[in-house]
Image (cartoon, rainbow, N blue to C red; front, side):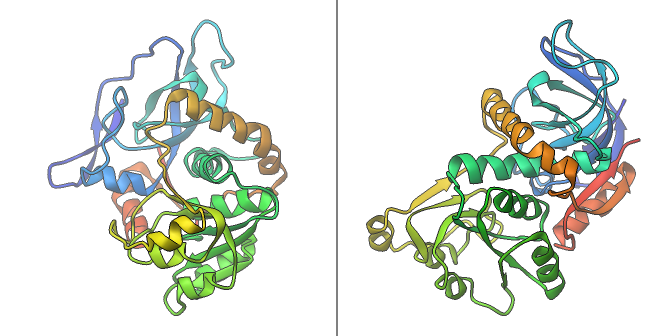
Length: 318
């Protein structure tokens, strides 16, 4: 089979590699589409290696057709599925633990389905489990027009939260408003801490961090939960610890990729039970910014690198 490998100069090449070998309780998927994530860019730069046991090539979520299965289990050859991976999605085939696989929601294409597992699992894990989000909470989501932001806004609204989010352009402001965001901050001409001072934020999903994290934390509600999942704005900030501990704020670091398979299975199970009907009815939408053939994956990466996308970028293998 073929997969995308990273050359020493960081260029990407569609190269011949060995077929995956199915281990016990694994399923082999014939991959039709893979969605891109910023973690792929980090892995390409050598800063985010895949967990042990996963292929060395990139790709955290795929959709395709089951071609090999264990003797017992839920899945059958021919099933149309999407899957959450520790890596290896930029390939023609991938071996996946059976509990990391979900059926494609009724009515969705494979292109749409491949954009669900990583972004929506990350949103569900951090908002619902880490953040203990409840009906009526005010939720702050950084980078609302990204693939993750798109998912997080809709998950928060589905569970009855008020959403405050950030964008970097007027076009993206309109995009997230149509998704249901209640308050949209254009970070290029508005101060995020100043705007947050008007709202009592209960839960924050932050992929930016950086110097503004400290001032933003001071605007949280008593007992608020601020969850940092990436540091796109920088890894260093200054906190007023007196303000921080007096208000009982929780600062939580979280990643999905390094969780146990059992924890990931719990998250995916929650997604299927609670959100699959909303996908099938169209209440929750998977918004695709662009699809490209796998051989143009460098162009696809550039879209994420340049923050061009509103929604997900997908590469097509078949």
